[in-house]
Length: 534
Image (tube, rainbow, N blue to C red; front, side, top):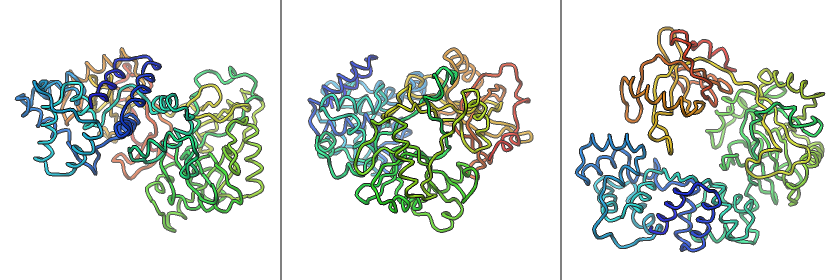
């Protein structure tokens, strides 16, 4: 644990990417394989505790630390409010031991101490956790608590970890990222396979790292001649890679989740192809010969069903609109220019037509002004705007600015009233930065959206002070506030939803501005929001 705690401190104190990467390389090179595997799991976002594997709940740890440190409960709460991070608060309240417990490795702590007590009775879990607190020095106690709370945020992205492993091993980062997609168990065996320079059988079913577009914030004409770009509609569905290798089919979402069985019509279409390939595209609910896809809410009814029955297959049939060909008959095509990949894709789907695998159409405006005019028709077409792809660009991994842009239609907007506030995470853990907003339903304000982005630092500090001074009630970490502050919210779309008390669900809400000029009585009404729904 001492080695991993030292790595955590080094990563936490450093602001330079190269320094962080160097620290990761040193750790993975020197750490025992079991420890390195668990460190990789944790730094990549993995958690050792979950709803199905309860080791220590937040309320339990607060009670345990109050007793173990002889601290009144109210002072524990006050300390947490001041520090803003529960793991650090717990570590600070326990004094360092005069005689630390014998050193255990990171893997031993997880595999032999914590995992064995998961879901056991409280007394047993409490004994294990408190004993660990009392025997660990501060740096190790802090990391221990970070593992328990699942908040091991230390300014390191999964890609940075993958780059460090690539630097250390010489294995291309694309291969490492590919092998880390999906669910994997931290073990020396997995680490060996991850860093193997041989092609493994499992590699055949792994997707390529997705190429992600950046939002276009400048004027489109600044990109140069429109003939250098390929324009496609930006679909509002599930980004996915459909893999057919050696006759086997796999379907992966951009979120690194296997979707096999959930969209059997798309998988059947891939099996019907006479060639192996990897397709990149968008899963959409689409009825027959309709001119536009069904709302995203229709697709959501399918996401939850591992094996949809005939009713769901009929009510929300799914197709894949394909826009890229990454591999054909075992040949990796990603280094080819976008235009050439597109031509090969068109030839493939033209030779084997199937409405379940449709080609995402290219839009050919005369110039950027014409493109802007067409973009304004996006919502009527059931799309979010345009994707702009440089015709000469290779297919890259991750978000690389310059070759793929998303030129989205201006957001829908409403004016809503701030109802609740909650402290943020990481650097914002001492400030109230997560907000819940409501609109009027007759004489009642009904919550309709949560947002935590859009305000600048000065506004965040001002709103934090206001929240603390105008709190009505507390519900754990959440405060209800006087319903007087109005904010303009932007969002991508609205869907009718039976799962929400308001009857609607907004997609990707964010704060556009603080409306100091508007009283709460003039905020928008629920009927206005429902009228925007598709």
